[in-house]
Length: 413
Length: 100
Image (cartoon, rainbow over all chains, first blue to last red; front, side):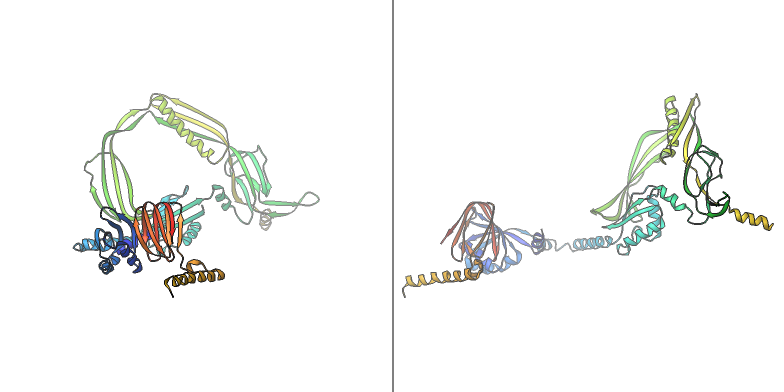
């Protein structure tokens, strides 16, 4: 491959050798270091066909005379011949040179950013963050420190457990692995002091596991919001069974309670339906950076239409993107029409809402103990009422009330 | 000295040289300028240490080396490249023959 490029750059010719001492000519070429390749006998001409470099051809004239042979040029290949052929088109060559220069200049900047692996964070959030860091579209590649960006991303977003930022061609790829939601709760735990675990809402205790602190309730007990579940005070008893001393800790444990949740919704049977008229129009716009050039502009004016824009970015080689976009805009015209849901349709819609309500629990892994749902459909509307009992975590933190301090306060009064 | 005697003497010199080279373990291509012929399967042959092409057509290529002629016969023979150092012959090779 490399040899072919060198041969092309230097220029070569396909020639036919005829005459008396053809083999001698070949041997003399060999002695003079003139490279010959693709040597085949030519029976029609009674000689040999081969390829010879331009430089070799020029220096073989003396050998031709000496060996009484002739060289007939069949084809000229390579850059020197191309340049000679197009010598009158200097501006064309200049244009090619400027184009190469522009491509080289563009390849030193970032023109595409790809964000992968986000779930709670959105791609727009990451792009805005990159913009704030001045590492967005059009930033010089030499100014981007991938390791520093990774560290900054991890420190700015606690939810980011792992990240990788890499530059390939003119594309910046940000891969993110987010941490699980349980890790967030652990981060909210108070580190020191005296803290109670209190009920976050009215519930019946379903389970209580204490790791640190004094449990104040038992399984099956009914508690109201704010009731202390695990106290942050550890009483030290003496031999008489009286409190000798108290130690205060950050209470720790898991407490779940059975709670009742209700959900209701009402869906009217009549609604406004999108009725597509069948009229569609596609327009194309070429975008260079922030400059837009319409190639096929929009003509039709629709009162209401659905617009879909597809962005095709110019990629001349793999991951070598340029700031040139082709925007394909498709518009579908529609009008609103009054329509009525059938009984099955409206009930399916109502059930869909109920299922999405249940998903709030199932996604978090909260067990649902009992669920009831009732759907009433009449001529005008569909009503859905549902209730369920689920086990939810009740843990919230409140500062522990210190007994001695209150006693002392009472004494001073 | 007659022509016959002179020829005998010339033949003896490489004999002595080769024996000496064998004695000190020198490769023959370095000591005697022997041709190196590398054949890959039936379709490729590389010749080094040759003097030149004696005759060439697409069925037979005769190459002059220092001490003998090497004739390569086959069909659709083609010289892929031909330099001062080596030459590469491609095609279907039937036989390689050494002629003194």
